[in-house]
Length: 65
Image (cartoon, rainbow, N blue to C red; front, side, top):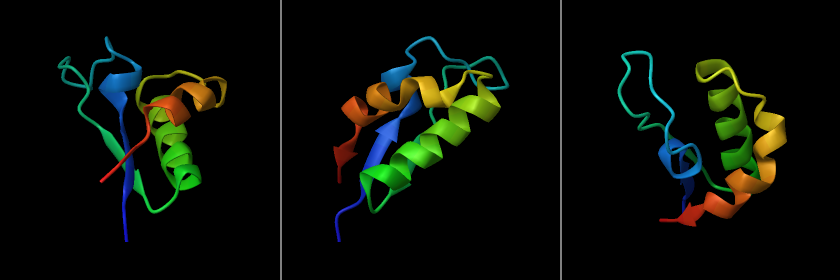
């Protein structure tokens, strides 16, 4: 089965991780909705950004592997 994924740095190009380096987080799931939920959680908790405001941006960054 194909895996869907989105990279944090593809959506938030200047986002930094807790060590101050460019964020390399990759949200992965079997469905777009799973990727969106994972990325919303990530950017909300790690970058203090309201992930719900970025659902369409996340959707646009989803790729299939």
